[in-house]
Image (cartoon, rainbow, N blue to C red; front, side, top):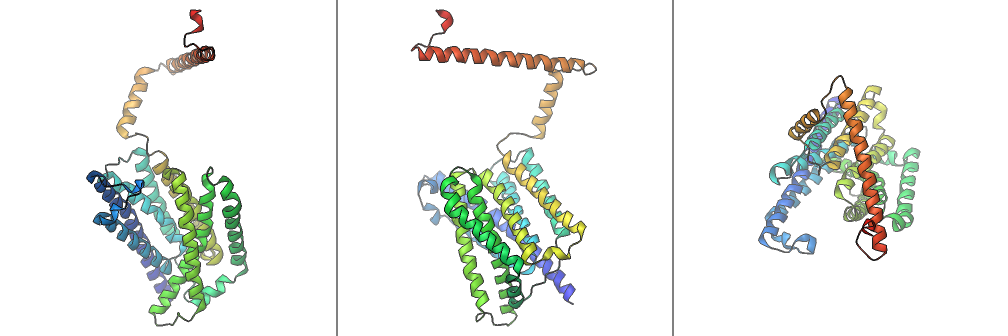
Length: 368
């Protein structure tokens, strides 16, 4: 009975995690379409300090979709292991990218399509190999896990690292190094997921009829969640405001997921019941998702498709016909020599121009 219930909870958590990604990914599209509609009407844009989007129903639909996604994600932690729920957050990036190509005419290039495929394969691999047994079913068991020496050491290190980055590293390097604010969000995120997991268990107990209001651990977890999430939102907004979103998103996903998986392994000990093949499969799936997210974001502005790739290959074949490999090799050597010569000519011309500018004239020295 307990084993069947564990499998039942696992699939509920899986369904909630996938639906969360769909809702969150779709919310970005709805918000963007609402903002574009306001721009066509001539309203003051949000980036310019306007708040006309509060009167746009599409924007509110996106906000409600985001809320539904976060609620589903919250509930997923109560049923499925964090090792499964957290990496599946990558699907929201995939959903957003695919929907934007259809509804926002933002073209998805070849790298993006490969990134989407790899994200799906990696997520599927993690689902297959994720731990399917959930050990913690009450707040008493959660309290015993929280006072475990291993987790106390981990939580202490996380808090120390976060404080050092907030008060020492952040003021000095936060404006120039993208890893500073992302590191703060990621390490704090590990604790926030632990709080979410504990509150999910408390809600399940409350639904079952157990009184949890008088349990101080429930309130401690709630206050901890509010503090962690507030810190994450603050520093994630700083990172997004300073650096390119296409860089922040994949780096934050990798750092945050790694932090959560580490915390999950220490606190919930979900990895102890996994065989070597499942551990390798989970890590392989996670690395596959990382590569997919990287391809999806790093090359999103590069115009590459199968058609342009085929045309480029045909042009190379016509430009460098091969005769047992000798002609092609010679052509590349001639091209390299020509390139070097052109670079030397440009360097010489640049030198003459700079000298002539220092002398107050734009004419070449050769004319004198």
